[in-house]
Length: 221
Image: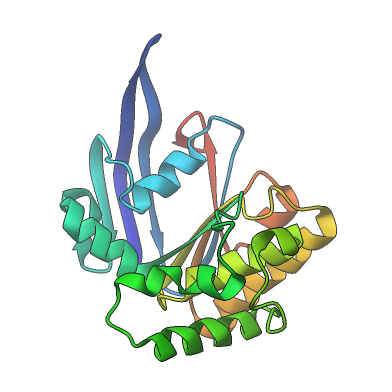
């Protein structure tokens, strides 16, 4: 088991009163699972993903990543947890516009004690993996949206994570490009054994998961 969530609750104060964003969420994920998280808008999907990453604090419950208790960790421990274990893929790609594809992929390695040649070799290999070996020196504006998301996936892999958290990774792509990105994530999951947790509103994308988590009004549905 790579991730265990027990009785997770997240409440926050809104101008209209207290909001139960997540209510008594419990599940277990095995290493190598491809997990899809679905539900209507406002059901708590992104809140759950951010909680698992330790980017927002939970109100009660437990998040256990292997032997690391996420909900009890301090900021430094959480930063190390993310750097060592998690790759992020976002809907809007989140690429730095003035950096090349290679430079964007290398960015997370800036804080690691690696030689420049090692950083470049790792980034180059990952761009080859995602089919962009001939686009290494291109800026994001010189790439299609599908290619930009491939760069983002390469960047998510550069720290050699054991888990990828993807928030609507096909949300800004047309259907054919969406299938390409989903197939790429699935191949990374199966070939490299990297656990994938993907938030999606797309029923077709949800079918890629061997484990499906469905939320409604902050609760498991």
